[in-house]
Figure 1 (tube, one colour):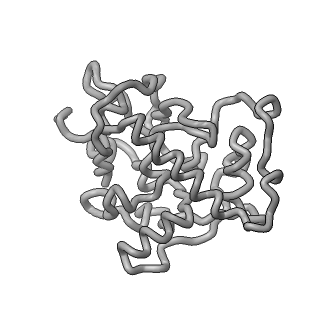
Figure 2 (cartoon, helix red, strand yellow):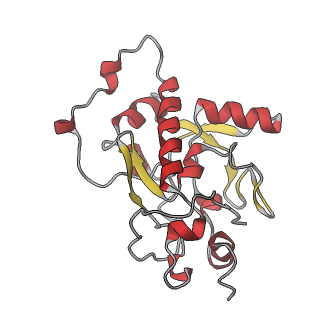
Length: 216
């Protein structure tokens, strides 16, 4: 096995990748950027989560209030059960980093409106990492840039809330907030086959480069 290859490439050889099984919410800003880059308008749909547990976002009330419509659906990238994301090509994601959905850019971080929470490698075959290399290092992820994307993400999901709706609809005091682990914002079915993962490393100082996202 060539451990010099990106982890995403090695992942694609051993299991279905996150690009193939994830349901990716896109913000109004994501929609505009993707439409401007591709010239397309039919790349998204409104869908209920395949895993109903995803509807429980009690640890992140802003997400729960803004992302879901009254019928429980939310705007997601179109995908097929066999091929995965509409923008998944032979060489990985066909969208440049600055156009990709913010949810995609943020993986493998867990986060809420309050900030980055931890590194979650549940969907990554981290057993394939080279000795001494963390998941963030392998993906070329940077916590500082991830925080900028997280801030942008929540600014954009606020655009989902009607201007006439009171901010009190999403107000939750610190004492009322549940303290359990944040639920991933990229959902995938219960039956999705992913490799077993060992505990993920903590977010730490890593080289400030962008994720290759080359899974195919």
